[in-house]
Length: 266
Image (cartoon, rainbow, N blue to C red; front, top):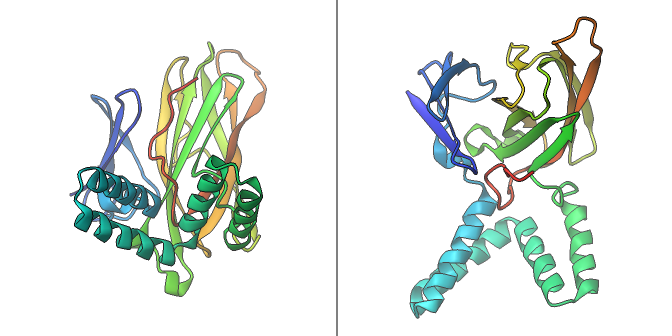
């Protein structure tokens, strides 16, 4: 049995567990257990796979600051060297840091130069690995993560998982009918994907309730982006027209970003 857990702001916890063959997963939202299929998630996946390189980098920086403040300079030096190795391996992290430092110091010309360098080496790196959009009271939040254990960079395969939270903040029940994704890699190659429902379901979402699921996307480059829409309809009236709920653009990034939760802000 393999399991992975995600903690959301507001105390909500999402966890899943699969059998050895990965054929069935149990999703636990708080104290309620629901059955879903998690598409594309391998049974060998473990929790450490979901710690992005950016999050590890941020953690090392925090540890270095703590060591320096406590005057443990030997440990601070070790962590500094570890950070340098990270930056050598991931120039995106170095350029992101330089952009932030330049802005903080009001060196805006330098910030623009670093930003342009960032766009050149990783076109989608300025886009966050999460997005949040609301259409007609239907809120759609997405968060993506890089799955190192399923990726083979030497073969040009980068594997990303993403989870979606749909919240019905309207006063009418809706049903998700179809999905449409626009997937672009770092080379500008774009693919449109259409399908019926999600994870084999066409869920009904009542007012003030939500639906969550996880899926995955292989990519040929270490970064890219996704966006799209869900076709839905209100089911409380016969003959209601369908409408599209926007999935705002979000990044697929090998280095990720510093956020690992959905925002519960309105």
